[in-house]
Image 1 (tube, rainbow, N blue to C red):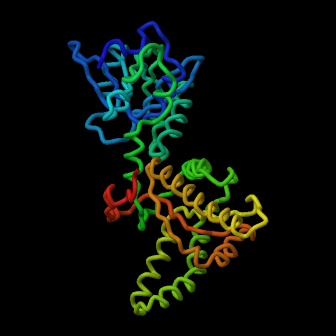
Image 2 (cartoon, rainbow, N blue to C red; image 1 turned 180 degrees about the vertical axis):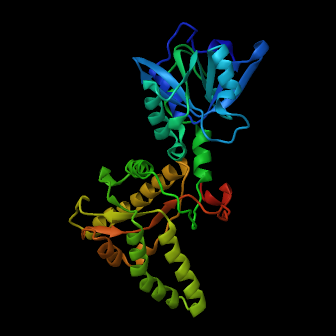
Length: 372
């Protein structure tokens, strides 16, 4: 790294909005405290950036992840009580070193007890950022809060004042890991799914590209167990007919039918993406109108991909079932949807009961058929 490329955010400078956005957008930071004899101690932490009493504050929970000592005996807690000055580093690594980025925040750390006003604000922010905290009793444990923040930042391809761009977007390596980490799950635990995760995933779907920006998709969400069971029962006859048309034996038909029904009953949430053509542009010739419809279907696929990636990023799993394509009217009637909605898929969502088998992918050379 070259010294001339260090952004001038010295000890006397407050963090910029871009730096705080960069820090909040990452999932893990490295917190450095000073132990006995001046020995540094560094641990990875989950955290959130909040504003409290007119200043930015970094908060980190003392949570239920496995630990060998009581929370208040953790080295970072003891170190903070003795020497409250700390630093935290958040970074993006990239194989292209011109894209390396980090922000270091330094400040004064405090142990915030549950009766402090900052504690409730911090808990809300942490649970909004990390869905795992919805299931942890972090509201009963103290928080670490870092105040009086000062920032130093570095971006490998830029000199001078810190630009907004490197600090506003997730790194390419983070996106690649998200895309490759997504998996299709068919077996789910009975644990409930936080509503905000589903809402965030559908909001992400809404940012998919679509013909003329018409967003020709809508989403039905089924959570009640009796509704999921009713839908599975209603679709069973259609599934059975399709499986029998494939020439499969009665035993194979029965096994596959049972697995499909169980998948819908066990998943805590079902999302039904529907094609919505009512607001598409209209053309006088059939060819262009058909192209418009095909574009809408293509964009629905893009919206579903956004949905799946958002669910995976939140720590949950999902699958993609195309069964409604074969009985859209049945699904629409069962769910009481308006006639303009055409069910195209079923997305079971939940926590995986077991790791699914991963299918291989074609090598890059097989995917590119022409490059001139």
